[in-house]
Amino acid sequence: MQVIKKQSGAAFKLKKGQKLKVIDPEGEQVSDMVLFNAKDRREKLSSGKTLDFEESILISTGNFLWSNRSNKMMELLEDTNGRNDFLLAPCSPETFEVMYDYEGYHPSCFENLYTNLEKFEIEPDDIPTAFNIFMNVQFDEKGKLSVDPPLSKAGDYVLFEAKIDLIVALTACAAEDSNNGSFKPIHYEILD
Amino acid sequence: MQVIKKQSGAAFKLKKGQKLKVIDPEGEQVSDMVLFNAKDRREKLSSGKTLDFEESILISTGNFLWSNRSNKMMELLEDTNGRNDFLLAPCSPETFEVMYDYEGYHPSCFENLYTNLEKFEIEPDDIPTAFNIFMNVQFDEKGKLSVDPPLSKAGDYVLFEAKIDLIVALTACAAEDSNNGSFKPIHYEILD
Image 1 (tube, helix red, strand yellow):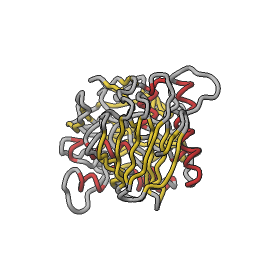
Image 2 (tube, chains in turn cyan, purple; image 1 turned 180 degrees about the vertical axis):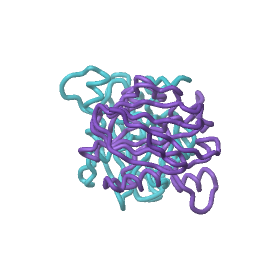
Image 3 (cartoon, chains in turn cyan, brown; image 1 turned 90 degrees about the horizontal axis):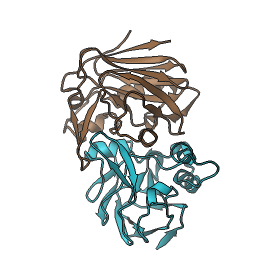
Image 4 (cartoon, chains in turn yellow, red; image 1 turned 90 degrees about the vertical axis):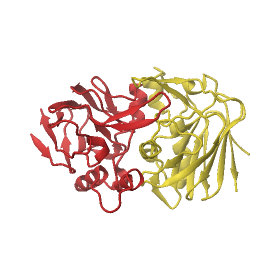
């Protein structure tokens, strides 16, 4: 079991057929995840292709995560919470300026993704919209969005299976609104 | 007035402060649009940043289109139809295989975007999720998506203002589902 400390991130390789279990150990925490083809980093996770092919805004058990080249990257095998977001970009320094009127340095998922992905020669501009595990973004019939506290309870998890060799980056989210104002760790496990 | 013939595309520069009018001349047609910073093509349109900062799935008059670096790229000054999509990736050859069970060559917005963007040294992998002007993607409270015929009438338009120097690519959509099965042109005009 690997621990991602509060407001930090991790990046690692996951081979085709391996499973990744992403766990919310305390409840009400979010983990932003991005994916790259390990053999060609120009192929990466695409929210637009995923929402198109899965015909749904909400992605959960039985759905696939697709790449910008229209290939399946992961399948969601289990999802004990059942609410994830694939609309919103990872929180970045500008998120805290534009959305929170926050001044000065603030940790962000965007920074925690690109600093962990540096070792794979992936740059900030390469980071796509993340699959935001456990994130509770509500929408009404007019499309109005609100970021609500996650519904995840302690021990909730999502189990993914890699469909190709992947580079995976994960965070323990650094934004107050995403996790009800209390920063917590995320756990993950790689299963063969 | 420039004409984009049915199932084709165009790409051009638009200077900061210039306006772009995208017109549906016959009604029920869609135009996929992608944007790049003309001075640094690694900065480009981001659906995730736009939906986050505008706090809405539906983007229309008064909203901005944002980049992956959290900068405003365009403002929507007027939108006579009022329905656009920013969820779904441009139709690509695989769209017709996966979604339509179509075999053989089919023109696509993805191809029409990247072939027109070649002259600016922008490659297929660089194409982000497009802002799909006039596209009528409906969603229910469970997030289920459906691509319905556009609501646009002949002469409907969206007027954009560039907030930075841009490279713009536009299509006249090549997918049957997006335009109620009848391929039509798109017109556009650049206004100083």
